[in-house]
Structure formats: structure tokens, C-alpha cells
Image (cartoon, rainbow, N blue to C red; front, side):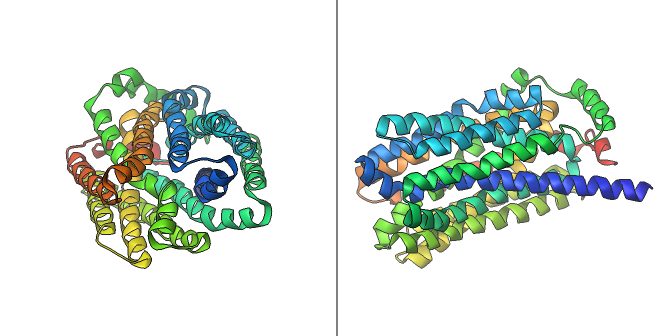
Length: 417
């Protein structure tokens, strides 16, 4: 009987992880599509590269501004309702992107699209805290964020096919469908907690959780936000300017660039699984205090090497390999970053992870604008990659000073189920 109960709980956990994987896949499929549509949209709406940079930035700003409110919302009403609502909303704004008539409407829609997507990962962090023991937080976050990279990778060739078959407007209409289906199924099927016993455990844990306002002022959160800024500054190039960069720098066709653009994102998806397993392996060993720090610091060092390497290479194949190394390194830092936030925030996991993700959004906003700005100022793209490499080295050093409660057994009793 006990074995059957454990098997049933394991199946439910795997089902929850599968749902979160599909959530992040849809999220990035919808998010990255606009990079593939850049040329068609810019031509149809008479938009310059600077205007498209503003469009990319509008998403990043909306995503940043809505982070903490959406994380707080998920902590207060529960991830079931919160995630169903935000997925439904961003699906609506995906459809409305296809109705854009000019720069103004496009800026408004993409800002609201970003604000709607802001609740996805903080809400997912709360799902992971509610449903999974600490020893599984590494791989859980790895699975979650690998879905995002798979979605981003699929977006490039898939959206190129949609563009060719239906045009960019209809393509955005069709992209709104999967999210609507997911939101409906999640609302019907998911529950905020796996059992009544888990609810009691959460109520006891609330006594030990730090108030969100106090947590946001702590050095631990400042460091988490700083390193996440760097990670997103580096990664965002892959879903914004990398595609047009490959087309312009190496005179590739959109189809060729789409195939190349898949490689770094699939590399990043692999990194999330590798990192998740490594985080949990270290957590279960005598090196538990280093289970977040070592993978994250190593990832940033690898990312620094990759982005610097882009400036040294002169063929699309070698350049995309450097992008892949950089993306692999940055994505290794994701699982320990989110596990770290759950460690220090517990019942406020949604709000704390949202604050960190907000800093990442600011990094994405900076990246979207820094790349074209530095290109205009210097006449080439190398300055962006040099700055990104230096920031990644600083982030690696930052991680070596980051400590969390996961090195104690305080949170472990929930895992004895």
C-alpha cells in the first residue's frame, strides 16, 4: 500500500513537471516568434532597426514591471488560478500582435504581452515549492527552463514555415491557440497542493518564511538579482538580435539563419537538464553547501568564454558554436538561481523569484538596446560581446559569495514522502 502511494505521488509529480515543461515551451514559442517575423513586420509597418529594438524593449519592460506583482499574486491566490490567468492573457496578446497597425499599437501590445508572460516562471516556482521536495528542485527547474529553450529553438523554423504559408499576421493568430488550450486544461486539472498533509506542512513552513519585504532588502536577494541581470543580458541576444545578426553578418537567407539559430537554444535546453541533475546530485552529497554555487559559477565562466569567442570567429558555423557555448554556460546558471530563490524565500518563492526575474528582465532590456547602440557607436558588434564577457566573469565571482539555507536540513522534512 505504501509503495502504491509513493508510486502515485511520483506519477503526479512527473505530470506536474510535464505540464510546466509544456508551459515554458509555449511561452518561448510565442516570445521568440517576433524575432523571426522582424523583417516581414518591419517591411509591412515601415519600421527601422531602432524601432524594432524599441519593440523588443517594450516586451522586456512590461515583463520587468509586472514581475513582483505577478509573483505576489501567485503566492496569494495560488499557482493554479495565477498560471491559468497569465497564460490566457499572453495568448490573447499574441493574437493581437497580428492586428498591429503601426509602431504605437505594436509597442502597447508587446508591453502588455510581456506583462502577461511575467507571471509564468514565478508561478512555476511556487508550483515547485508546493509539490516537490528540496532534493528535486534542481532537476525540476532544469526541466522547466529546458522547455523554454526548446520552444525558442522550435520557434525559428516553425515560424518561418508559418510566415511562408500564411503571412506574419495569421501566424500570430495561430500562435495564440496552444496557450489557450493549456490554460483551460491547467485550470481543470491542477490543484495548488498535492494533499491535505502537504497543506499542513506549508502552514508550518510559513512560520519560518521571511517576510517578502524584508527578503527583498537582503544581500542575498541583491546578489541573486545582480547575477540574473547578467545571465539575461547575455541570453537575450539569442531571441532578439542573433537571428538578424546572422543574416546580416554572414549574408544568410532567413531559412539558413533559422536553422543556425536553433543550435544555441537546443544547447541551452541540454544545459538545463545537466545543471538540474548536478544541483540535485551535489545537494544529496556532503557538498550540499556548494550545490547552487559551483554549477552557477562554472556556467558563467563558460558563458564568458563563449561570448568572447564570437568576436574571434569569421564563419557562421564557428560563430554559432560560440553562441552555443555561451548559451550552454548561461543556462547552467538557471536551475541553481531558481533553487536558490526557493531556498531563501520558501512560502514567498513566487515573489522572491519574481524579483530576481525582474532584474533579469532589466538585463534583457539593456541587451536589446545595447546591441544596436554599441553597433552604431563602434561600427561593429564586438563591443557588446566584450562587455557581456566581462559581466559574466563578475557574476561568477558573485556566486562564490552566495549562501542559502539549503545547506541545512531545515527544509528537508517535506521530502520524506
